Amino acid sequence: TTVRILPAGEKERKNLIDRASARNVVKEAVLPNGLKLFVREDRKIPSVTITAAMLGALAVETEENNGISNITADMILRGTYTRPDSGKIKGALQELGGEIDAFSGINTFGVSISVLKPDVDLALEILKDVLVYANFSEREFEKSKSFMIASIKAEDDDIFEIGMNTLKRELFAGSPYGLRGTGRIKSVSSLRPEDAAAFYKKYYLPNNMVIAISGDVDAEKMINKLKELFSDLKKKELA
Image 1 (cartoon, one colour):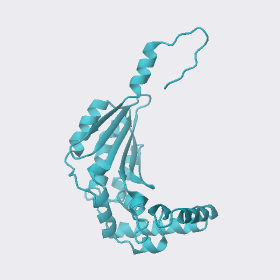
Image 2 (tube, rainbow, N blue to C red):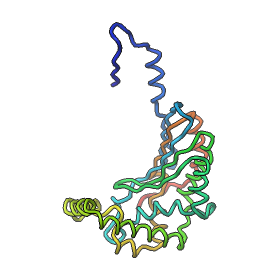
Image 3 (cartoon, helix red, strand yellow):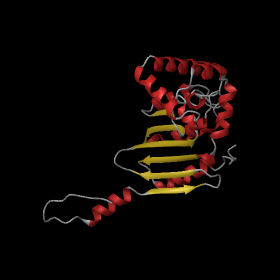
Image 4 (cartoon, rainbow, N blue to C red):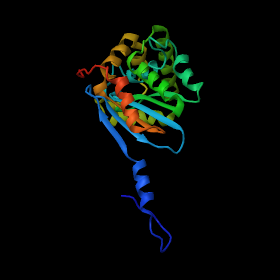
């Protein structure tokens, strides 16, 4: 329901309503491999936001591997088989005024990219690269692990974070939702590159993924481009 306030005696022009409604239409598609696509046109500024999200994250962690979704999300931006370091991933987009970030929450984790309109093709290439070809090098993994442990220690010095973690542990005892979002020092310290690689292969699947795009794009053409780029991903059953 849309509500608009107009000056007394003035009637709303239907064509304005129609144009506003058209701008808010989201075009949807589902590929044979299960990948769900959503594209929304928004021509106000020449930029595009791309988000790929998967189910999983904290909800599928255990006491033993707590923190693995967080470190896996960080690792996929640290290097792939075709872009061996973060400079070829983050740096490539930052040079063009764009950005890429990985996220890991309670039920979902993934990647978000913001770029200017002319750089969309590069952004999509990098997106597929990090979603499919992350290499989990031991050197970068140790850097990521050190960063995560430092974040955990910083939380342990924050009285608010201590309170929130204690409350979650009490409210959701025995459930993944009672675990710390960043993980525990003990569990993160025990993780190995192959653990993150196995987690990646298990959850970064087309039938467990949604790609949503909003910005200065032609929705129909973008859907077709995404089909060309991601149709070769193989559907697998989640264990």
